[in-house]
Amino acid sequence: MSLGNSLYNARKKSGMSQEEVAEKLGVSRQTISKWELDETLPDIRQSKRLSGLYHLTLDELIEFDIDVKEIQDAIDRTGDEVTDKIDWTKAWSKKYPILATYQNQVQTEMYAKELKRLLDDLQKRYGYNELNALLVLKDILASVWKSGNKKGGKSE
Image 1 (tube, rainbow, N blue to C red):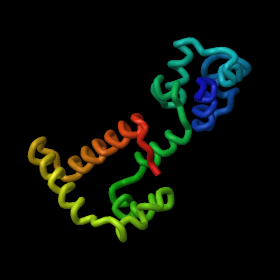
Image 2 (image 1 turned 180 degrees about the vertical axis):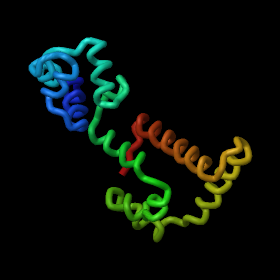
Image 3 (image 1 turned 60 degrees about the vertical axis):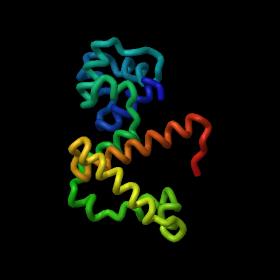
């Protein structure tokens, strides 16, 4: 995504018009338009002011992706009480149907036993609680999967 698109999406997400942003920064509306169309770039001082105005870090502003930001905001707003009520397998199986069917095909007990051993090891070795051990193991699995895909592995 271009910087102009990032600026446009961040402004829209903040609910401000080009005129409002221009007024707050002391520039013309046309200047804001040119930034959003990638015709010109804001200088570093204006970029810093834009990041403050949009409540984003400079890095977040440069790489602003409205979809990712909305997902992150939803995660931040969701409490443990709500997440405990969600059937995550059912929710994710809409996107990944294998999650709804693998239980009838895979001998999960064998894998569950080995995963439990790995979780216990993480807890003993590093002093993690159950949740943190699970999150670390999930992250390790994701890393293994990503490295396999970079080497030509395929996912379905």
